[in-house]
Image 1 (cartoon, rainbow, N blue to C red):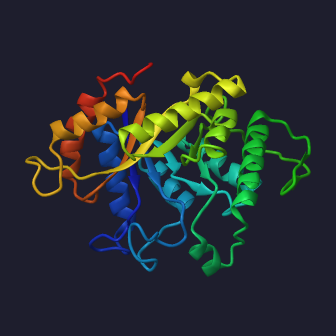
Image 2: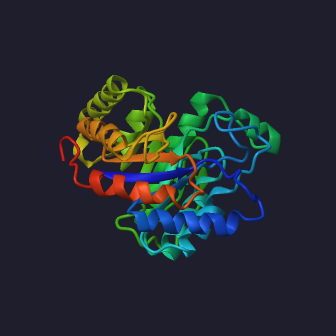
Length: 300
């Protein structure tokens, strides 16, 4: 089992002036600890679950490019890009560029978008949910076409591309893996089965996760897709300490928690860390990673 790191909050001591070196240090610490991937949110404003909209929020792909330049092995992605934020042709070009310059370490994390406040604030169109899902499916089709090298015109309901040229092509083969965020049972998980390499579910309790994975398995069967091809990931928070004081967990408690996710078939638990800007946090994370790497997820 693998552990990934999500960084949703940039309001730290010394920010925003120190954000560049702080993020570089965090990424290097994460890589040294054995964490397999680093993710940043793709939002324009801070989201209400983390803090007020006025808190620091960095543009996702510029940030990932910065992290790519200061690391060597760790995978990089947005958790997740709202389909409304960028035209799909430009999004594919952006992720391809990240993949090329990082040596094949980029993911495309994508979803249907939800935060109306930031759309209205910056003048970005925010269509109804049904339309956003149509846009999401077309974007997935465009991504796969561009990464296949097919330059023939694409004509959908929402997007028309006369020549979806993508050169240079991505370093990842056959393409940067596609992760779709969300647990919607009728549309989101169906799109995972049809187009994606990975799903991402919130840590919502074991029974609920097991149910969502069962729904995904059913969509895979309907689509003729091998369920085992899908990388299953979760998103949660982890506060860790040496003694488990307050609302923190010890290394053993964290390993037990993540091991129970592996029993459900989760391949990678992506977590945001409290005190992520503190180097000492990664000393404990390294112990967790070392033990969790020995756990084989159910069905693998």
